Image (tube, rainbow, N blue to C red; front, side):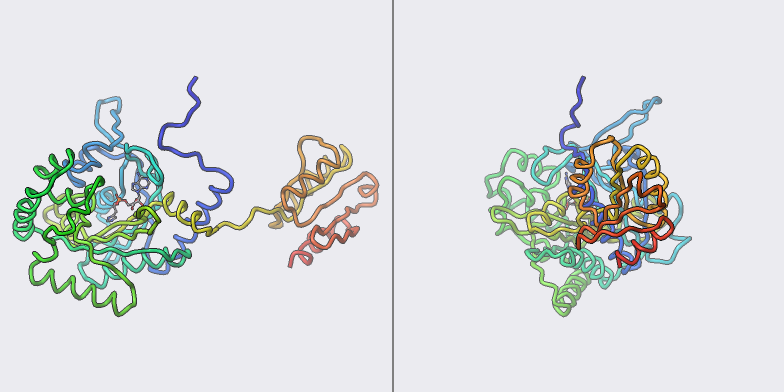
Length: 418
Ligand code: HAM
């Protein structure tokens, strides 16, 4: 029998699960400060949704989707990202008519991509993301960038770089692509890029093998319309005013086809290379491409939680509290063990973290567990004590031991734990 987890997936337990939960709590807290609302969409969606919206020449669609057939042979995929499902949900349930615009949504959940697993790259991973739908305003772009950048800073990361680019669309993009193709003809391209240059030339700039040689390529942000140029300038000016450092990266094109203007990433600098923690941008045509009568511009980003946790660990940043117990019960007899059940009920019902031994182990072994579990107090229950309706409570920090009446246990511990 195969008892191995699928390649590129992780079992998350104990310390790592605590770190992940703590991270999720912090993210929820921060995103609420910006007035975002949670959205949860299904883990699988119709395949066609992503083919249409992410782009049928992108790696995500052509190579990386986990595909499923249901009993009626309909094609589904495990969602590779959440922007498209969020837009699908907004359209299906007409959220734009029910809530204040812009819709400010966030999500936390698993995504699936059939990629070659490596450091920080999984086949099932968790994303935290935001999507702001219904308004085009560079100040909103600034808010989204600030949210992403500042939450990474708030977690204690410092070696971050915010990269910006601005993609031309329509006639300007066509013009740019012609110039880019002429430039690319002068370059020695890898096998993948030789194909990309025909199907999706912008993606060549993002070559994973060697994109240094495209430093001198024509820059897409030199081909913007006047109004886009103004938007991009305004955005840069305000980021500068807010003291948010950024670099312009004309090679930043992103792996999804729905972006229409601003694209950005935050990368963490490592010795040998950089790791992208979050990426996003503006996608003003996505709603319209599904529903031509609607014009709802949108902007958002997503952040990989596993990559972020990895980076936090590498920077020795811990988010979760050390696990501890308020009370561990030491039972000196079977009778005491019996009594322990009702005492645990009382303690837990009063908000204390409490536990006891269920292996009928010796008193010495129970004291060892007390240490291992880092309990703040031991409650020692013996037959003599039970006869007198008392227990002994030992404060593990001070070493002080006291006899306490049954009915006073909660009051006593509340004072001790203040
Ligand atoms: P993305 O760049 O494909 O964008 O993914 C966003 C983030 O998810 C990445 O920066 C990375 O941290 C994490 N990520 C992606 N693939 C993997 C993987 N295989 N293993 C671990 N982490 C991964 C999107 O998904 C867009 N939907 C973002 C967006 C939202 N754009 C606008 N709104």
